[in-house]
Length: 119
Image (cartoon, rainbow, N blue to C red):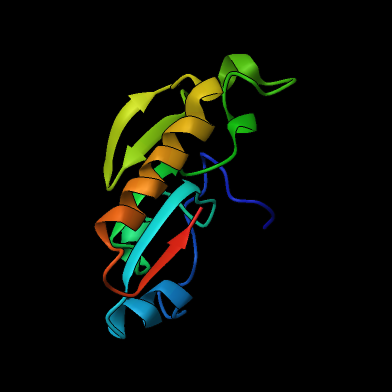
């Protein structure tokens, strides 16, 4: 129960049909850039829930070395691009710029078709 974190073994129920899944079926390009927080990859990743592209973190950064009490026992924060970890403990001061740039790129790549973007 409660918020999902780095130890969670559950996530959004596979039987739940999310908005990006419905839109993908309707022909939309779908992208998600930011914090997912609905379960850990690979089983509960955005790519399993209708997002064709995603860049982000799977849970809050308070489940990392930035935790106010448990910092020493927390794992590094993974940054995902699709279903691959591309960095651990990325510089969070750059998140806004990185995610914004990727969102703008997504818009440019799909400007001539319907798209759904979650940032």
